[in-house]
Image 1 (cartoon, one colour):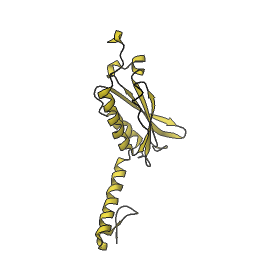
Image 2 (image 1 turned 90 degrees about the horizontal axis):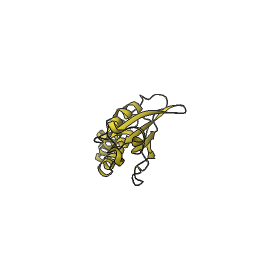
Image 3 (image 1 turned 135 degrees about the vertical axis):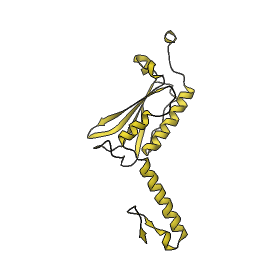
Image 4 (image 1 turned 120 degrees about the vertical axis):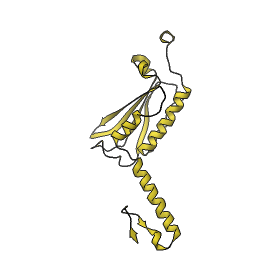
Length: 163
């Protein structure tokens, strides 16, 4: 059997078994996909700032935990950037934390899955994001889908005297 790039997967295509060849191909594809979805903390923050949330505002930053940098914090404001200030910003804010990145080097891809949790929600109670553990790219996709729904269905809380 010929060895392929992965240290634990073998090329079964020459063994004569079509089942083994298909299985090896699926394992190889899955391994490559997971490797591509494991972003470093820096890459994750860069992509988080570019999430498509219309005219609303996203701020993403690195958080330091005991022993190193392994967290990302994402603030979502249900307001356009020019309106985010003081109490108005805080009354339209959601804060999410994502943990599980490499502690020693923020440029190294996450060692596995990361976990997202919602820390603050100043919007309606029904807009709580369920905690989820997945690859960094899957977490970004999950968060973007959630925020798009919030933008579409939740009006910003702006007092009458400020409109």
